[in-house]
Image 1 (tube, each protein chain N blue to C red):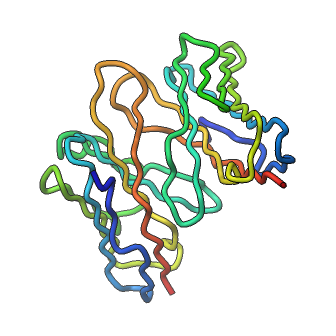
Image 2 (cartoon, each protein chain N blue to C red; image 1 turned 90 degrees about the horizontal axis):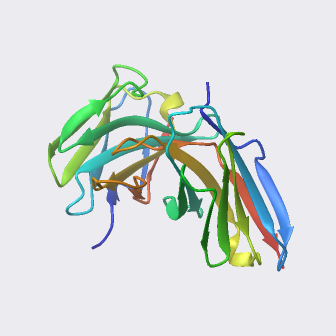
Length: 112
Length: 116
């Protein structure tokens, strides 16, 4: 049973508009949530994270929102750029040096 | 630092052959993870090590899979014998223990395995 779910396999957005990628989780023990970005033929690269004690974390064009009661998080990219086209993975972990549990990813296409 | 280095980048082999994937983690990182990416299952954890010691190998699919970390700078993932369903991209990642905060993994570029 998947503990981290990304229900949208793909998303298409026009350049300059907002991209919203969603993620749901089931394990209440998760303390940290991360987003990774992956280009073809490369490994995933870390983008942004949020702790369970916060509900928002912002880094430039990227903002992650966490709704702990709904076990839901989202990544907002504003404004979207063609270079943002990639697969985005949501990941979660418990406290400490524990492995990340990943969703299956959402492929974002930003159209110029 | 050159990042996490994996080899080979691509491997094509025939069913029944032995496959060995290699990983050099980032210097100073004390945790190492092996993940496998497939269309059906996404990124799934196979095994991870802390300070060269295997901690959890429950994700290793079968006895055909084995992993070792003989020292802090090298790990191998071996499949013997290989089967077509093992075809996937295998990623190695490393991280360092933090007193608090998210466990940010740094991934290698992956090894794409095709078993014919």
